[in-house]
Length: 150
Image (cartoon, rainbow, N blue to C red; front, top):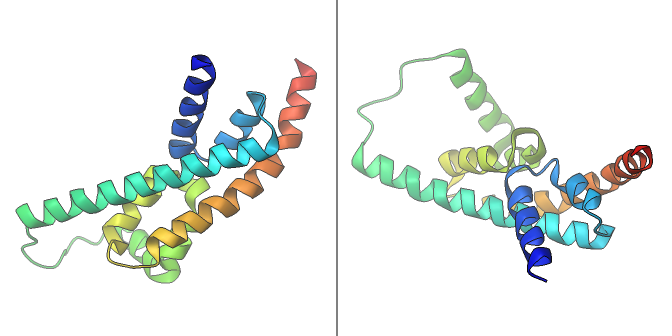
């Protein structure tokens, strides 16, 4: 019983950080599709909320102790890309990119640029649920094929 509980907690933590690989790992651990969706979505939502609120607190603290002295004048290629993505896609686009850039990075970027946007948390919850279904159904044939090989 304790081993099962520890395994589920580990899978929840895994899906809260490495979301793209989590449904496949949960299926490979022997769980059914509905249980996989529950574990992956719960871990993904918990990870998103944890990193979003942690980032909000950290960025607010940082800005209160180290206020900006003026507008940022360094325009690097990376800064331009981040601002273009932020302006073009917004919080919903950032939430939909969870599997590509990982839950912690996406949630921290969202906390940096959209911490006062009321759409941020619902966007992450819906995005994680949609991606859980998609990734689970695409992972199932791959996991079954790999289990047949070994």
